[in-house]
Length: 485
Image (cartoon, rainbow, N blue to C red; front, side, top):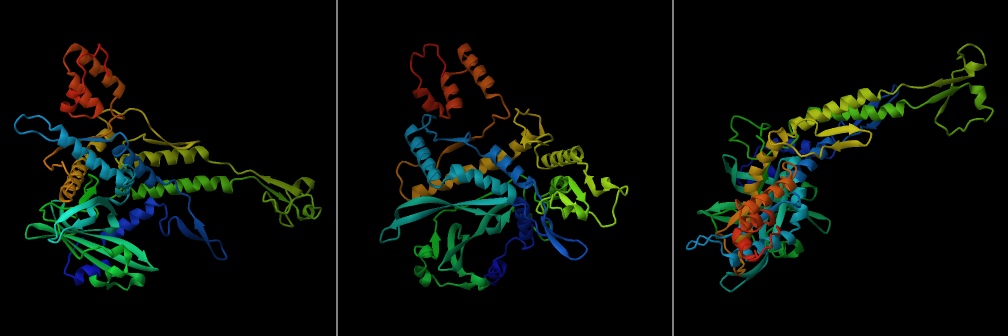
């Protein structure tokens, strides 16, 4: 099935199809399986031999590293709701809203998939999170009485922007492939604006063997996956029910004269393909050095007839009949020891790792190739380093993305009549900065500030325990006994 032909037939325009060939290429580097590079043929004089090039997996390495820095177990969020009369936080509503968002995230396996999709974002440039209401119960008038808020995850090959401006995608299509009774079906959901409000339109297309025949909605009940799917859902909101997540890197891949700024993100290593190619070439040569450089012993044919050597031993090879080093017995055994160029290869690989690290925003000396493989620097980094600036730059976008996601979850919860929720919330995302700052030293300094009276206990608890100041103030005992938490 050609999805772009389907869009064209339905009058829908999206990003130029050629851009998705780049996504496919990035995916092949991410998997270390690039056609005609990692798999290739060599002519040996009599025919072609298929070969597999060794890979250090540099693309996967930098994507894992970026994901672990952006989204790990130390990333926390807090939710507070200001009271207009008192200017304080309404703990009851804030806590229930926070608990609801956390429950939805837990059910959606966010603490695992959140990191996984940050890695996929780094690899393919774009991911999307689409919260939705499942198992909805409606009354006779069609009003929602209850439902479960869930999250669907999408990667770049299945994300198609439809309307965008200044990089912000306001309308989009998302594709997911389902299989039932050995037939493949593409579920296409369109998030469109109609009369100022968002409508979600669903289509199901059979794509087995590329047939691309659309399934009428009255037949969806025959396929369990789509049995409860509605052809059209009116959200009743002027805010999107999807969130697009990209790295904070300018897309310099697809820039035609008619392209109004492609809103899709690019891979973390999109501009480092040549470095990845050079890195794998050197590592493959390094690995081949040991294979081709192992000791070989050439012996005269008549010595093999004495059954002294194991015929299955690959160390021994037969000398040509007329070969003699000096015409005597010593010429019957000829030892060959190839010199291994270990230092030259190691230096070349380390140079490429530095280039890769620099190109991907980590600065130099992030990775090093030694006897234990690739090691990653774990030292605390300074605030004026390339890596610090890169992380802060990406966190600016991710901070906004997470806040949008949480607000969509809250809106769906309110739509499902979950009690004690409010969309009028202040959301704070606290990213892990432990690699940037010495957290123990900072905490000790804050304790001294509290002892000196320049920092309050409530402020201290709010900072180090992820609480709102109102909550923190209510948890401080009247007599602390001079002991800091």
